[in-house]
Length: 81
Image (tube, rainbow, N blue to C red; front, side, top):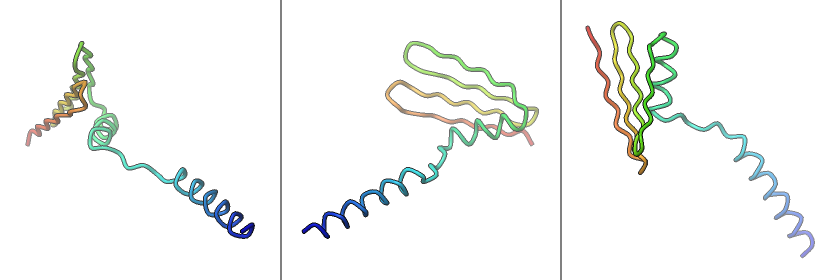
């Protein structure tokens, strides 16, 4: 019984250690914001009572992100060719 408790504790410690070190995937919103920042975009953030709007613009690309308080996110991308 004691041996089983040691094994269970050992397994639990390793599960916690490896799961906490895992790299989290970025959302599409985070990837777009990072990409536009790297391109030197003009970024405008508007926070209102029930939603947040982010507008990013470069010479050839416009991105609008609207996120409501209930967690719904809308992304619009317009590229000028």
